Image (cartoon, rainbow, N blue to C red; front, side):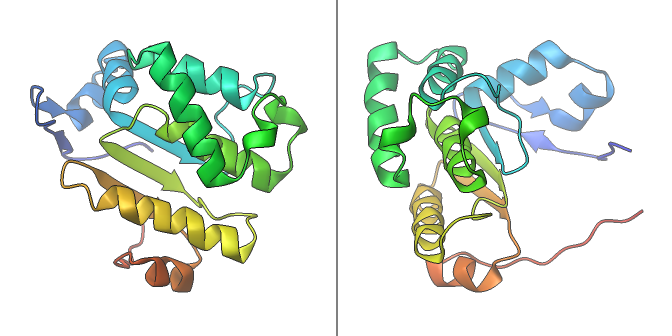
Length: 173
């Protein structure tokens, strides 16, 4: 069951949006527009078009956000270097290992410099050194007062070392 009593989103330069209400009213076009402009979502479990390359999906994602293609191309190279996937940008996602896919998903989520970043297990299947680097990148992004980063991870120790505050929660059935 998808349920939230209230989820208010107020971007600095935009109007207030009550996400829970938009969701319950199935206002998918408005939700899609908000996600394209403000949110970056990365999951280790899929969500990208498997036949696309990281470069192609990132350019698609940047276009949805209204980003110029020249800026997007530069940002792809910058993020690829940071995530150590420069040599994989033109490989179809479906041919990548799980760790490569995760890094590709992270690049796609970050391409348009979103204000809200949500990452589900961003260190899944990554070498411990690279996992630390990824979390340090997220922590650096979170230091921007106009940006929020939320990650779900089982790697509490690495997240703590990277500078994240650990909040433990649970779901109600």
